[in-house]
View 1: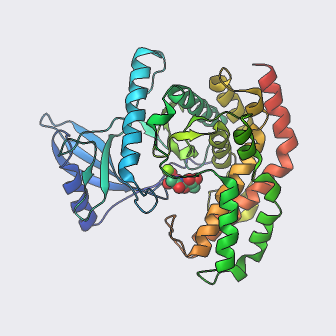
View 2: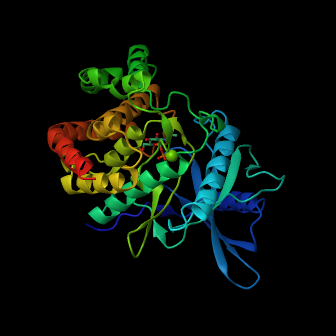
View 3: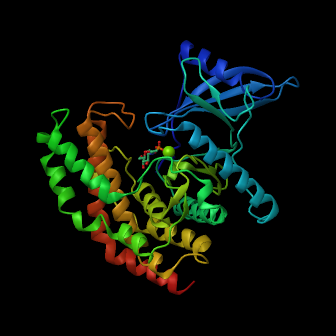
Length: 383
Ligand code: GN1
Ligand code: MG
């Protein structure tokens, strides 16, 4: 299969002017020479700026505007990100010297904070650009899958000793699948965009999976599944992979790091890494569960997570893939019914296409679940 790095696009003069003005407010050296848009991500707006220093060397920086419709308190997001990046930097330096790789760093801005206000409002931040790496929307080989899963397990380990009270809940009830389910049913009932009639089959699909939505939540409530600090958005394109060695170098997108279950992290990684089809693929015959990819994810994840993971969590790793794929499908369908107010869309019915792809993948996972559970059990016992 051909490589599928996440897309980057040219920007028009107006956006270029905006990026220039924003980047000039951060403490970065040199003069702005170029800017482009990074298109992956459905929430924030992300750009890459190139600066030329006095000695002629060029360096790139990531500029991002936080979407405040989604993150109602963007400054809480910034407090969390500052806390997490500082902690990781400390830990890599002092505790895990052999971890290697790169870490995300925020640049200070005019006004003495790690963010600046944009001309039309909004909270902007600036990160270092991790060079020599790609992010992938579709995994090409099992080495990438193994590496990405190991990186997310290490990430969970890195943030495991952050005091939970230090982190604010940037999106309340983010992975409350039961609440996501109820919300979908309410929106379908109210039908604000007049689209519910055309998604009867999808709604029926969700209803037929009602029994699944509480499984991790109930474990969290009873204490059987521990609450931990987790990433909460472990899409495969949120890990930077070295272009040459395929090694995972750095986990990015720290906006939803907060208390949760590691199962959501593992499940979302499986959702985005096992299928050779894009998240919004319209040809559903292309959606498939590639068992070798799943196996590489399990091996990579357990390599870094086996020491802290509990038996009860390991037992639900395979199921978590089904749960999170259902949950994200529910969220896409809800947004479709609400008139596309949350996720960025690039074509009509984009959220519906994404939802259908997720539900097809749920079926694929269901069909493979016994084999997936068997494989997890084998690796877990042999750890
Ligand atoms: C959003 O922006 P991005 O692509 O990192 C969403 C995730 C979804 C994902 C689906 C804050 O993440 O929860 O899983 O889209 N992020 C938020 O692709 O809602
Ligand atoms: Mg994200």
